[in-house]
Length: 172
Picture 1: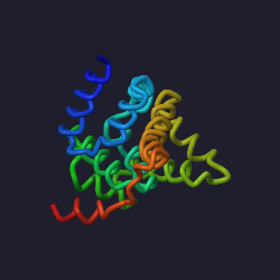
Picture 2: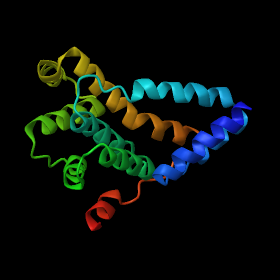
Picture 3: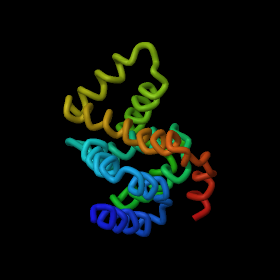
């Protein structure tokens, strides 16, 4: 019974975002309770705290771009657009050419975390001063969110190398 419910939810999600949910189907077929736990992780991965959608999505998009999974990045772009970010802003976030100073600082912070730069103290201080500890927590969750599903999919053998997402976005 739980498989039927989960499969229905998987199909709805896949259809809504035109997203390949094959890895979720596979998990559901072989370990439905693992899929339930995966769904519960979403609560943390989507934690926004006091951040604006633009701030949170800047960290998530930069992280998803670094994860090198085209379908996951496309999904992150669709969700960012659904939440009000315009295409030009999204492209600038992905390219690292953000004009907005706050978003540029978030992009730099995200890149520093992902690169594991030796001294991140200044980045952390800047983010904490601007967004508070709750905002810093939400930014960290957004960075994890951008990496989580691509790594999980890759571990299951469903990783797809990145396709030219930026070129497609700019063409539309």
